[in-house]
Image 1 (tube, helix red, strand yellow):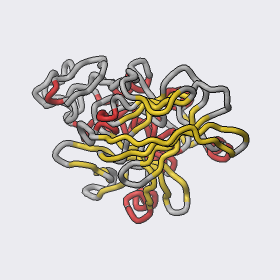
Image 2: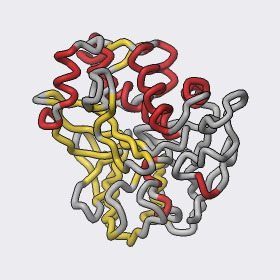
Image 3: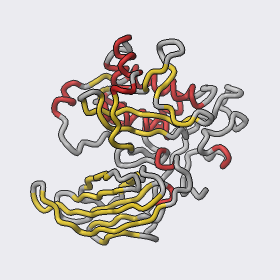
Image 4: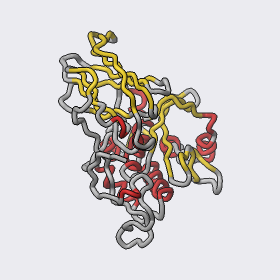
Length: 305
């Protein structure tokens, strides 16, 4: 599997996606523990295959790795890249003028993606710049959930990456690491009622701001948890949809031998509760909140990031 990454610490290739085997280098002083040194997958835009043209470019050179890179360098207030994958779900990503490329995840799996580029004219009016298709064959279906993207943005210097390494140190396995990071977030971040009431459309989380302030909304909780877990080589989906009638974010994780876990063994003995850092934190892990989280019928998924 070809993975263009630059790591803080390189794991053995055999263990990259599984979080490394228990026989790999263990955390210092914890024989048998999983390695907790962070591994950050770095998205790149080499320009080998580009859709559109200036001012709006979408580099799909590394589409096999589960991401595209987009850049808007025009003079309008913003531009939009819409990605519609083989699952038929259309994802809209808003870009402000910048010299930097932004990673966008390809969460629809392998198949044909339609890429539409739009430039803001005024208000809510957009002009079409291009519409093209690209065939994507993922090297591994987990890759979109290991790389950073516009919604979960982090790099080697992100504080959340260092905190995740410290929090996961000594964990026996990936599931133990997930539990430790999950608890860290719900115990250290408080729900920001004022922000929730005033946040505007197009808001994107900054994971280190959430750490610094110790507060956030559901989007912040989910993005922070996702960034921390991905930097620990644990594939994590940031999921957006509805909890009842409330627009909401939550996460699910992939653990080897278990597959995707939409719920997590937690709080109530052998019962499963959904991994929802916001509700668990804001509800002080009350029994009623945990029952709500554990009932999958209360959640309606719309988007994966």
